[in-house]
Image 1 (spheres, helix red, strand yellow):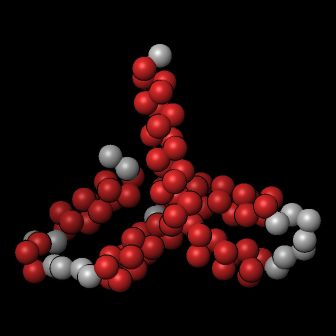
Image 2: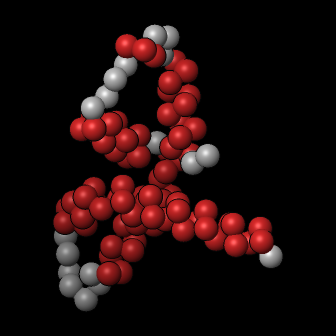
Image 3: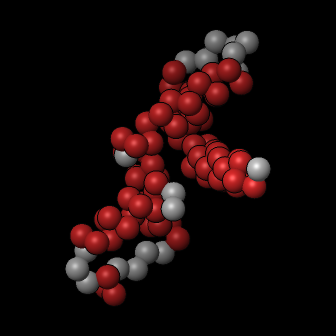
Length: 96
């Protein structure tokens, strides 16, 4: 189970009447982003992503605001891919 899923399950346990909660896709994305950008457990991954952005655009001098904007736009997809890659690496290690 991914850390985000564990966190969402914990939040879910706080809500008593789950049948009344329904999120459309936009609300789900906003909730997902909120958790990713406000969970202390994700801080190392956010820092890693920012460092990768800086290394990708290194030849140019880019203000921190631009890096933060790119980070906000790309982090969710990058994190998903990163976690999938980690999972695949663990599966390969288990086979050996």
